[in-house]
Length: 190
Image: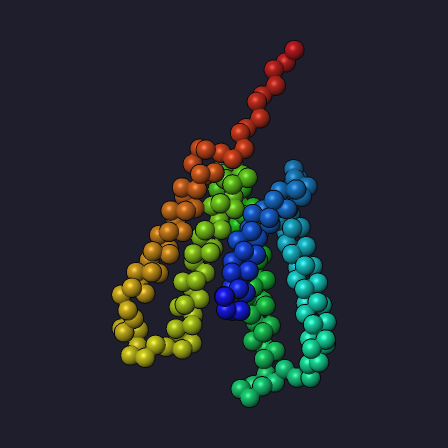
């Protein structure tokens, strides 16, 4: 298997479990009066994890004998790297906020998915992001022949990704009555 594909599949695995683990972490934070802060508390530790990975990356660069230059033939890579990092961090922040809102009962203005919030949110994120990625790439590097030259299968693929996200999010078994966790039976007074 090619190296790039191995890394891509490891990313799929990492990001595939990310939302579920993040929502589980969020749900273990203090609730009650602190419920509005639970998502941000979980996100704080996501940021700490990013910082740790950043330190490890610096160690790897040092071990590889890098020259610590960040300017290449086409310019300085730092500004766009920081913008990419901000986009990623903002996405992680809005993801944790979406998970919290999806878990909140409908009566309180949330999605009402409870423990199944990740099953509702993540398909939308993971099907929508590739479509946005492709559109952004095409805006930065327009296709030869312009947008009118886009192949029909590509357009169909974008539509299928969007409709697939909707169907997976709406009809995930944990969202449609076959709850993964049955509600606890009410205790009877003795």
